[in-house]
Length: 439
Image 1 (cartoon, rainbow, N blue to C red):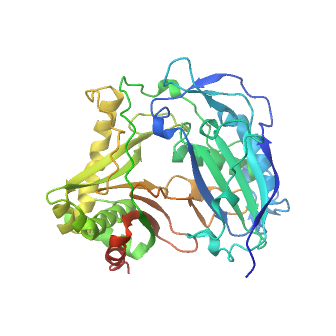
Image 2: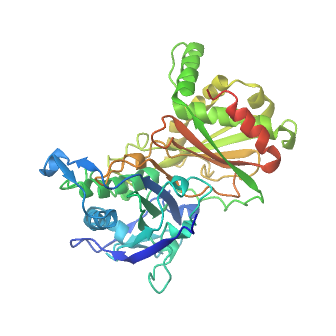
């Protein structure tokens, strides 16, 4: 086996393909949150670019066509067109006149774009499952200041398209959390896909709308201290049969009530992790579970809003209770917290929290943080070659006990959980408990 390597073919900014407004746009309260100003990295793996594709009826093109352009050229052209609709992405973040209120300067500088080729097949590098057989610096853009003068924390998006010898390709994406949450970033990428497939405009019309977003007079809490934790990485696949079985059990217990696959997966995670780390938790102490939910419906935001519209859902209970409960019982605890979210979000939006910042977090070993990538929309992005076999964040945080929930890679069905939430001391117990019922 030779050395796997990626070679950059070209790199530089892709600018909007038509004139766009020159203006400075405000960011909303959640956009401005101090921990959001930075680039989120993700990989989107497409198995084969040399396949017949169905042209969308809206395009007026032939019913069946074959993509002959390389994926990088297709994505680059569609990106330029998409930036006409999503023109703030072609700008940069600037500090406003008021301290703590950054804004987006719509300067049409563009999105930094890299075209690259790999000297191997996707199978050679195990379809980029962890541990990565290619370094992340080979898969996502890290331009030098000489090539891209905008600082990373002020850049809004960067994209790399790497083509493999098998015909597959990978999109390496970096988007700034200060302008878009996961749903918003996926909406932008779907717009690129729409235009790549020949649609005359994106299916979802983008809405900036930050002036209609709540702006409560609540000061963000101090940045959290990060613990020194050496966390192990473990992946789990939840078959559809397991999820359906637990859904039926929950419905039986509650007289026909519904729960989601996400509810089941994180309830199982919370139970098994608590049992595994039990000796490290002080007697009588609480264990905590936290994830973010979309607040678009709660805040009645206009369809197409692509800024941050998330709100934390925090669940806390004594460790002994969590460890001693069944997964179905803990699903009920999770769903109770989700039901409370709407009222808690509205109290925050109206400034009725007594000055308390609900977004403030505590990162200790008793707490685990979950990020749900399964329904954001990244798995639906189609540039004319079909949808990705997998799409998800490039790395977990190695310091914070965290878990990613995403769709299982095609052709598998179900849910994949990427866990970086226990130390080596507890890893075997945690993995054993998680896998014992997954049939």
